[in-house]
Length: 163
Image 1 (cartoon, helix red, strand yellow):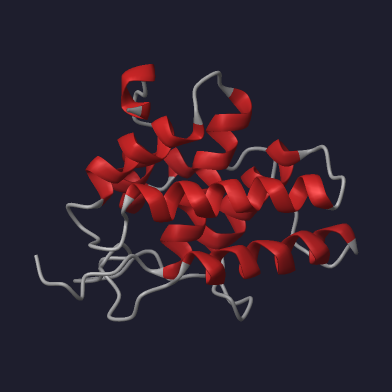
Image 2 (tube, rainbow, N blue to C red):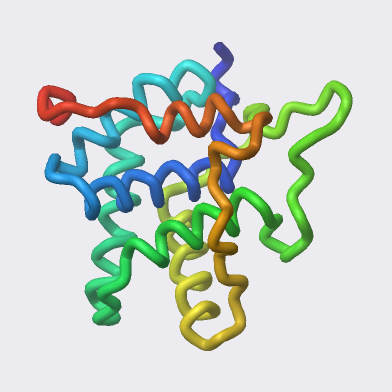
């Protein structure tokens, strides 16, 4: 693996939001989710270190607490759906194509700060009625091309993963 195999920004958005979501819904330390997901993701993306993932997910949750937003589950789920389905410009994301891999590594590193800024902007848009809400029947597992990503964010996590 070359050192330039970075996770695309939308993949990091999805992963960090999934870590935050699973932490809120679960009963394990946030590090457990980040450590376990990192083990799978680091094989494809050199920048998916556990610390980057959990500090970003944690910052997302701190932001929601700071603005006194209690519905972290809805915001995380909707951010995942929007990150997967739409480019930052708002255009639908290309997920299929002959010889096209939507999960191909990016050449540029997306920082945790960039993910947090995207999340903050998204939350404010949604709160102001300008964002795209998630269709009730949408789920990451329904996109065959993204099965490796779905598997990575839904991996079985145990308390020992926190260590």
